[in-house]
Length: 213
Image 1: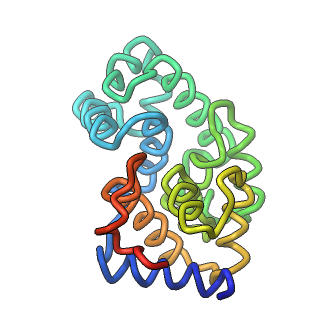
Image 2: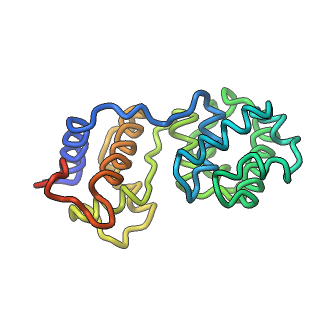
């Protein structure tokens, strides 16, 4: 079976088992951008607490957040962990967002995907997964987001090797599937779902919806 067929089989099996995931859980594109940075090395519940704190303090917009003293911002996002580092990352991103695109999501969307990705990766503290999450979920650009769940599921099903790089994993999807925002969004979310529920460090293969693939 060709890789494209195997990926399609994985997607169909997961979608039939779990349905639509309604991911990313952000109310606005800016919330997705901030969330993509805050969710580094933590779970979404901790990010939600941080975002609620920012909203409650009345600072959850690009200009106000950029002007907030770093010490105060760090306290507001403390629940997300590594809060001092994430404060710097948020500030770096906000400076880029304001200087390059006047803090306008619409202006940012008009930029070419490859150019945007290169710019995002040039922001200190923004890695590939974070950049691609911003591109796909906030800006609706057809870029596949790779994470640890994606790697674990695909390697255990012998679709990729255990030591495949981020770029190799991403190319697998970009080269073998239609460049469709909705598809990439749903597929990544389904990997998270099966990874958390079944394809854990100690996998539960017998009841996994991918059993047999």
